[in-house]
Image 1 (spheres, each protein chain N blue to C red):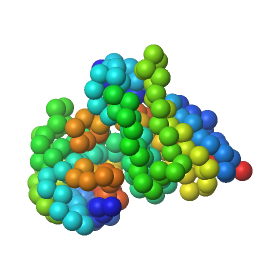
Image 2: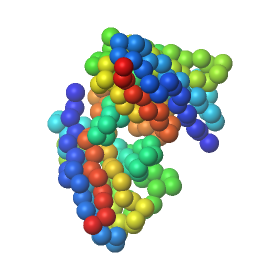
Image 3: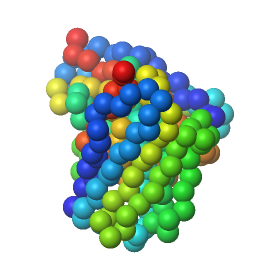
Image 4: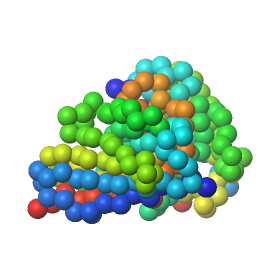
Length: 117
Length: 107
């Protein structure tokens, strides 16, 4: 069965960069599909952040384009989120998710990130 | 960006009720509309794809309808396990966006 698991620091200071890891088991991220980061703010709003495809191409939400980078380590079947110059408004639960066609069919359990000094 | 407006924000119901949740798009999105359920402290779970297509493993009491700008998720005879948040998501154009959610709670 396909499983995704996020990991991250939990707490980041304003102006620093955040780095999150999504470890995928049960499916190779180089076989097919797009591998996404989605975040959920306090109050429940969901925001799609970006993806890296099975071929390695990336696409980002224009609202984040100057701060975001998604990369991968195919040997470990992991992909990563880096978000630069974080502010308190980046406090959220971060999910990684697989996109099949046009919808998200598998999600990780989420990792909570707080931005605070 | 396409804005999805869900209504009502909160719906208080009794187990056994039939309920309808609405999602309205700011422009036509054909049938590129998907529904998710999120229970407390869990990640979202796909319920319906392409407005009305069922998902394997999802109970048959969940159904979807609509196209263009107006969509509905219906739950026939709500069960206690159905309480939580429901979100719609569009994939007609980038960036993909989500609605603000409807909270289904016990009356």
